[in-house]
View 1 (cartoon, rainbow, N blue to C red):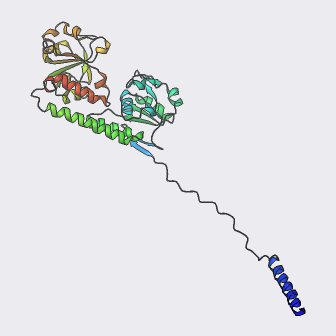
View 2: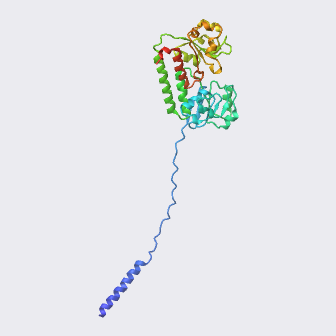
View 3: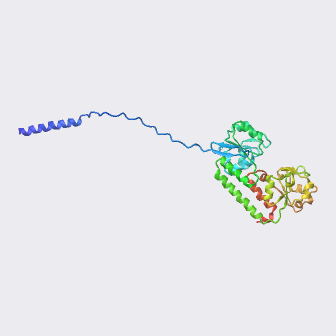
Length: 327
């Protein structure tokens, strides 16, 4: 019995020592101080895309990005912007920019009579100001002298020039796809008119009246104007092409001599009527009067070098060659 007890005691003591050794705290090992956390590297962003274009005055215009605040100083520019869905990027307009209807809601900062409210323009903080050939050169220089970016849009000399103007404005305001779509659509419509006119067997003489305040010497459009281009593209002959300047008076005697076959009244908005023109002294001998081919016409369609020039072409073609557009 005694040896069994001694063995048990020894076993308990040994077990206790073992447990004691297991529960004792370990001596900490020497450690290397932790390195401070490394901040994530700042990503390198690509430079903001710039917009660059050469305007009609030969000036290279550079913008930090597509223009979001645009001032238009010409109705043609305004109509192009709205046609490419950039009307919402306009913050100011000239007084005559009245189409589409939404354009009238923008503040007017210039008139067509050469008056420009430069303080109002500066206050609008525009990214770019779209001028035109009707904008006085000294106004362009004044605006540039104030540190503002001005892009001069030249008048197109043909339809390709119109398409080019549309596309460059699309680039300036970040609407390249919309501008291309509009230019393609207009090109197709002009082509369609040309295809119908290919069957024409004559080129009727056309008198387009701009201002008949003095019926003995009404104003008309001479050579090299949009209107001259459109009349020819519509299959007609502009009687004003014999004049020496783009806009001039033509005498009643010269009109009688040329004997226009179609008379178009671009001054109907100012009260001129078909009946009044037909009753003018000495005009009764003209073929257009005798054949009742005197028509009122919306002058905005041919005096503004914007997208509606193609509307004007289509209407002119129908009036000059009704036999080809009967259906």
